[in-house]
Length: 562
Image (cartoon, rainbow, N blue to C red; front, top):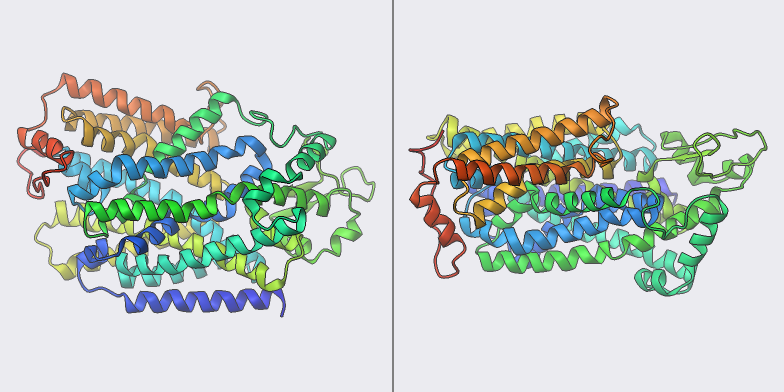
C-alpha cells in the first residue's frame, strides 16, 4: 500500500473512533456540556489535558522551529513545560477549589464585576480564536500532503469533524475523545522517533541517542561547513533578551490558557485536580523530551537528502515532489549549476521550506515504511483536533455561560443554555477555519502569539485574584485592558504593518512578557489607590488558600458589580 492509502485508512479509522466517542458521550444538560459533569477520572483527565496541551504546535511545529533555530528554538520547549508546572502548582488547585466553570467566571466573581467578566470573555475569545487557527492550519497541512488536496479543503474537513463531537458531546465528549487522541498522537510520535534514532545512531531511545551519540557533533560540523553557526550555539538567531522574554511569555501564557485551566473543573475535587496534573505532566514529558532529538535528526536528514543534489536527483524523491505540490517546499537553482544548495543567505539559498513540514516529512526523508509515515499524519491530526476542540468549547462557554446566562438571561433554562453553547461552537469553528486557511504565521508562531496575549491578560488577574486580597475590580480591569491592548498593538503592528521591534528588539512572540509586567504594575497600583474589595470577597481569597475551608459560593454576588 502507498503512503496515501495508509493515510486514508488511518484517518478514516481515527475519525470514526472520534465520532463514535462523541456520539456515545453526548450530553443533555449544561453541566455535562461545560464541565463533563465533573466525573472524569484523574488519569483520564491527565491524558485529555496532555492532548489539550500538546497542540499542532507541539506535534508539528516546535521540532521544526528548533530544527531551524538550533539552541534558540529551545525556548518553545522550556516555555511549554515550565508553563504547565506553573499551572499545576500555582493555579489549578485553587481555581478548582473556587468551583466555577470558566476563567471569565472566576474573574467576574473574584473581582465582583460584570465589566471584568466581559473583558475576560473578550480576551478568552481572542486568545482561543488565534490558537484555534493554528490548529486548523495544522489539519490543512496534513491533508494537503498526505491526501493530496488543497490546504483549504483539509481545513474544512477538520472543521466538520471537530464541530461534530464538540457540538454533540460538549466537554464530556471532548474529554473522552482527547483520551483517544492522546493515545494516537503519542504512538505516532514515538514509533518514528525510535526508528530514526536507531538508523542514525544505532541507539533506539531518541533521548539517549541525541545525548550520547555523535549526531550533535556531526550537525555542528555540517552547519559550520554550510556557513551557518553551530547548531548548539546559543543566541545565534535571537538576542539573549528576546530569548528570555519569549520563554517567560510562553511559560506564564501557557499557565493562563483558558482551555487548559478549564480541564481542572472536570474532576471531582481539588485533590483529583492535583493528581490529574501529575498524570498530565508525565504524559506531556513523553513527547516533549523527544522533541529535541526529532529536531536534530530532521535537520540532519534534510541536509543529507537535499543539499548538493542535482535537480534530477531531487525530482526522483517522491516525498520532495509531493511536498513541493503543497507549496510548503520549493527549489530554485539560482546559480544555474544544476545543483540545489542550502545556504544561510536568502539571496543564494535554493531551498525554501516551511518549518511546519519538518516532523511530517522526517519519516519520509529517513525512508521509513509507508504505514509509519501515515501514522505520523494521523498523529498530527489528533494533536490538532484535540486542542481545537478544547478551544472551541472555551469560546462557546465564554458566550453561552459568562455572557448569555450570567448577564443577558440569568433565568435561562438548561435547554436554552445548551442550545446557545452549541450554536457558538458552530460560529467558532467557522471563524477558526477561516484563519486556518489564512494564518498570520507558522503554527508555532501563531500559538506563541496566543500565549503572549494570555500572559498579558489572564495570568496577573488570576495570580493576584488568588494571592492578593487587596486586588480589586478597578485594578484588575485596568491591568487586563492595558496589558491586552499593548500586546495586541505590538504584535499586529510588527506582523502586519511593518512596525519595528522598538521595545529593545523584543519580537512579537516575547512581547507578552512586557504586557504581563504592565498588567501586574497597573493592577497593583490602581488597587491601592481605589477602595478595597468587599469583605466577603476578601474572606473568599483567604478561604481559597486555606486547606481547612471550602470557599463560600459567590454565584449570586452582584450588588456591587459594575
